[in-house]
Amino acid sequence: MRIIILTHDNDRHYYFCNQIIENKNNVVGVITGGKQINKTITKREKSYKSIKSNELLNSFKNSFLNLCFKKYGKAFDKEKEVAENNFFNGAEKHFFQNYNHLLITKVKPQHRSINDPYYVSLIQEQKPDIIIVMGTCLIGKEIIESAKHVINLHTGLSPYYRGGATNAWPIVEEDSNMFGVTVHEMSLGIDAGNIIFTNQPEINKNDNYGTINCKCIQLGTKKVIESIKNIEKNSLHSIKQWTSGKLFFNKDWNNYVAYQYFKKKKRVILQSLKNIEKQSLPKICLINNGIKCDV
Image 1 (tube, one colour):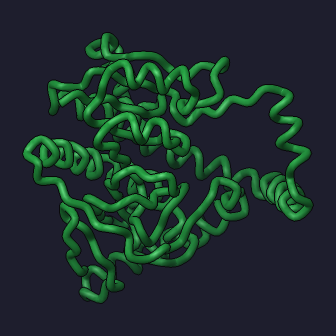
Image 2 (cartoon, rainbow, N blue to C red):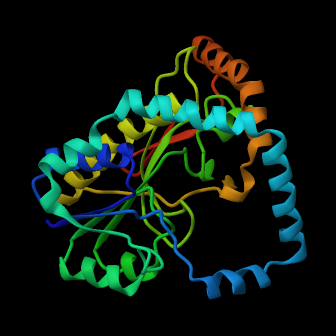
């Protein structure tokens, strides 16, 4: 079976590529820069004019909060950067030293996004059986229809937490033990496709969003590889999401939320450990190859 990987271009994304390539010998191409969305000046102007007044007000509010709580936003980004350096440093270098021949292209400014017909045609030329996705913008219908199996790695516990920064939001929401990772079939919704696997990392008292998210990427990558093997054995199963859960957009995050994160982080992590010790975890369902496992 022919596999294509669509991802972005940080070390964590190249780690994802490296692991799949090293465990499967049928990767035929990789496209990076998949998170990038480029707009012309004209499109940006039209987009700005179409913004509703309440959305414009929220934008100004976020700008104000970002300015007032700037140091917390910087600290949050630094915390994540340090964790990813510890977990994945050198992954990009390893990719280009060993697998550069598999790089089809990187999303370029002259094309709007990975959903541009240019990239769709490049994907379809490879005649993939499986498309694996991690860390791109929302994938469109044309790519989803370009392979029999299109699978996404979501660093969050679907269906409970969908969207962006979904291993940080459980701390802000004081929703301990809702950290995790999801491997699901791609759909047009945001992290809403049928679930193949979910998993949760081991937590320790020194953890933070960055370290938890990195652990989830490692766990999720293993589950993606397991999903590919199940496809090859014709034994892949998935389950429809049973609740809509909480959905977070990029616009929901600002530096004031980062402030709340730092204010609550230690307490929520310690509560998570206490819940594990006392076996008083909130009731959730984890998924193992499409089968519910109550926790």
